[in-house]
Structure formats: C-alpha cells, structure tokens
Length: 347
Ligand SMILES: Cc1cc2nc3c(=O)[nH]c(=O)nc-3n(C[C@H](O)[C@H](O)[C@H](O)COP(=O)(O)O)c2cc1C
Image 1: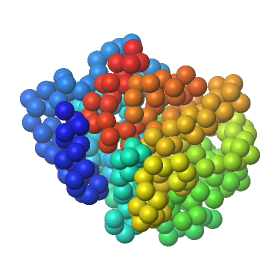
Image 2 (image 1 turned 90 degrees about the vertical axis):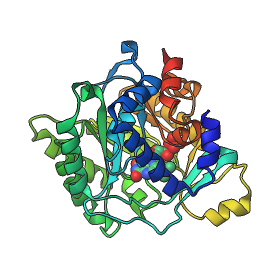
Image 3 (image 1 turned 120 degrees about the vertical axis):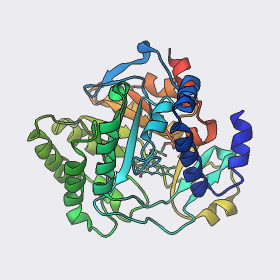
Image 4 (image 1 turned 45 degrees about the horizontal axis):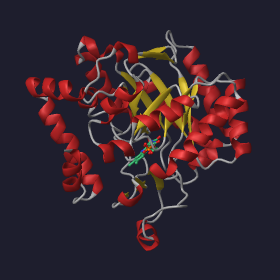
C-alpha cells in the first residue's frame, strides 16, 4: 500500500511534500476518532519492548532521528505512529532560514537522501514554548514518550563562541526535554565539524555538564558524531567521553562521502554538497558502533542512527552494542508502518 503512496509522493519535490504530508497527518490526528484509528494501525503496545536506557524508560527502542521534526510541531502525530521517542532539532539560539532551496534530494536507486538544510529552525525560544504547551496538554499516556533535544550553533556564531550557543539552547530546553544531543557533526554548517576536535568538545561538554549539575534534576547529555571521523579522532572522543562521564553517543550523522552509489554521477553532482543518509551509510555506521562498544567494553550507551530500514537493520545495530535505534531516511522509504515492522522483528 505505501509503495503506491510513495510513488505519488515521490512525484513532488522532497521538502514541500515533507511539510504537506505531516500537516495532513496533523489535520487527521486532530479528529479524535481518526487519531485512534491511526494509532490502532501503527502504534505498538507491547510492554516487553519497553527499555530503560539513560535512566529513562522508553516504551519501545525505535525513535525518530533529529532533523525530521526540527521545530517540535508534530509530536502527537509521531507518537500516534508508534515512535518510542523523537529527537527534536537541531535547534539554534536564533531562528535560521537555513540554506537556499532546493536543499533536499532523493536517490531512490540507493535508498538514500542528500540534504544541506543548514539548521533551518524557529529558534530555541519558540521551540521551547511549543514543547511547554505540548507537555501541558499531553495525555497521561505520553509520559513514556521520550523527547530528545538536539542542539547546535547559529551559522553566524564563530566556533570560538559556539559554547555560548549550546548553553543558551541547553538552558531554554532543559525543563522541556528528557535528554540532550550536542550536534557538532552536521556537514551543512561551515566549520561545525571542527568542533569534534577534543579541546573544543571538552569546553562545550564540560560547560553543559556544569550547568546540568546545578539543576534539581539533571538530564542525560549525548554527543552526535560523524561517520567520517578517522579512528584516531574517534579514540580522542572516547577518551574524552570516559574522562568527563558523558551519558552517551549518537552514532552517526550523515556523511559527505559519495562512494559506492548507484545513482548516476552527473545527477549526484547536480545535487551538490550535503550529507548523505540512508542505506549507503548503514555499514559504516554499524562498524563505528561496534568499534566504540568493543573499545569501551559497553561503558558508553549508544543511540544508533544511520541506514535503518528494517527489523534486521535494527537488530544488526543492537547486536553490535546500540541501546536504542533511530530512523529517518528509512521512514521516508518504508512509510508510517516502519516502527511497527521493526518492533515486530524485535519481539
Ligand atoms: C533532511 C535531513 C535533515 C537532517 N537534519 C538533522 C539535524 O538538524 N540535526 C541532526 O543531528 N541530524 C540531522 N539529520 C541526520 C539524521 O538525524 C540522521 O542522523 C541521518 O540522516 C542518518 O540516519 P538515516 O540514515 O536513518 O537517515 C538530518 C537528516 C536528513 C535526511
């Protein structure tokens, strides 16, 4: 069924159809009876899938990766589709329009996407207020619907000042999210990935931890890393993560590599710069998780992101040491039944 819908959706440009589809779902979910029907079709009610990670109880281990609901506009709808958790953002202190459009491309032959969105978002104040309202109106069942806050820096902020942007976002979102992800691995903000260097990271993460420790209830802080890191860079990050007792890692973001794609080279070139996601990054992402899990003897909890389309993909990640999984590109290609399908395989 979704194959037919996907064919129709894929006739339209990816970014407008993303908003159109989610806004249609929002309109449908605003009618109680229809929401119940959608929930009955797609959500997962199996207590055996509940899992406690990062001192949080997730109703199932399948989440939605950052960048899908950047502005926290579709939380009820995503919960209705069965997701165990959603990572909102990347959110920056000031609102940003992001890069010029078009900035999102499909590569159907590769089951992949290329994006250079550039942290388009409403800014942390508006997003925090939206989350506050959502929590205030949430049904009791929403308690186990975990929300992660993925935070970044504005494009105009120089790297030396980046720690301040992370601090602003952290403080604003702290009352409203369950865990944080520090994003220094997007390839679409110039220079951002340089912040993955050990000393820059230490400054940002220690500062956030200090603020966190001063709160009545601290929140887990994770770091999202790039699949393009060299082994020595990963080792540096692991040393730091263990030294400062970071709560976890999200592995991985999109890649700038275009190796091994089936899509025509000219087409790929025309799409231009950006991060590649989906099937082509699955293997690299899994290898990184396996490496980290082995090297740290499982001491650092890992959320897996990268190329998860099926239950088998999710099992692959969990088997090499991931604690939780996130889908993004897989959701576009597999459709709204993806959580249920993955959960059925994990039972
Ligand atoms: C259009 C698009 C926008 C994204 N935006 C963000 C973002 O704002 N922050 C972030 O940390 N990751 C972002 N990502 C990366 C995803 O969260 C995910 O890590 C990556 O796509 C790999 O997972 P996948 O292969 O399942 O898509 C984005 C991905 C896509 C396709």
